[in-house]
Length: 122
Image (tube, rainbow, N blue to C red):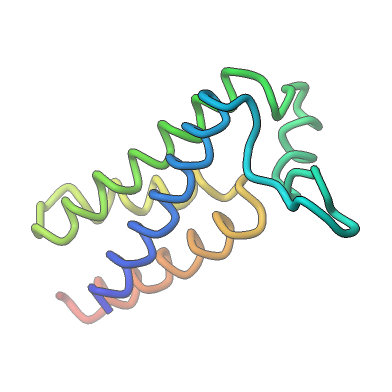
């Protein structure tokens, strides 16, 4: 279970940091090049727009990088068994629920796995 938490944290962290960093450098996020969803952002963008933010704005791009870096740092801290890593990781999961669908899914799975781990006392 621990390695699943670490792998999921590193995966979502790397993706968010990469996509946000790329958007800052190149000007836009990774989007489908063709098909029905060509050029469109994921469902998370509608949630961000609903609260009055432009999903393609620099603050939102920077948010991607910060949230991604946080996941990576917390996954490594969890791997190193730092006592503060689990509660911080739980908070980070909740803070990532806006990133529909993958941040939501991974956040909920990691929260569940952390709850199971703590229920077992490990």
